[in-house]
Image 1 (cartoon, one colour):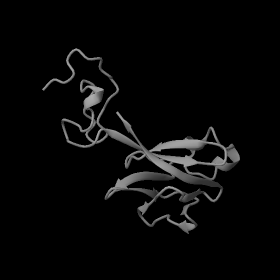
Image 2: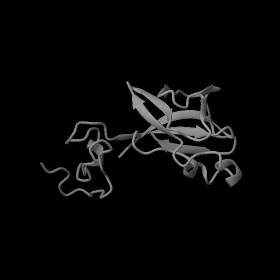
Image 3: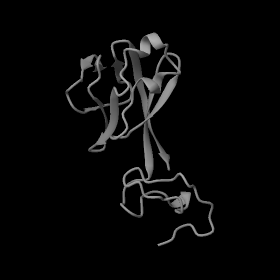
Length: 145
């Protein structure tokens, strides 16, 4: 089955679930993957600090850590955040955070979550990483692939 014949294609468009190339599907039709049926919208968690905002992908495979914050915080703070500190995933329609074995732990609204599995997050929640960095969940956004 061919999609988008004669339309401009996006060589980087891949399904986040099955990794199939969906670049030939016209952008206006990219709601669900024609191969696996999963949503073709990326979900992001917007984290805010008193200085700026960060957009982190909800992705059960790719963890987040110090690299995500390197342009915002000094090395003295980043050294407390593990390279693979936490991840955002979606479970039963809710976006969740999970500490994935960080050295210095993660707090969600003042409660330690390291080793506790998935915890649902919502706008306004505070996340403390490594005891040195506090961010606030500003919202959750969707972006079409």
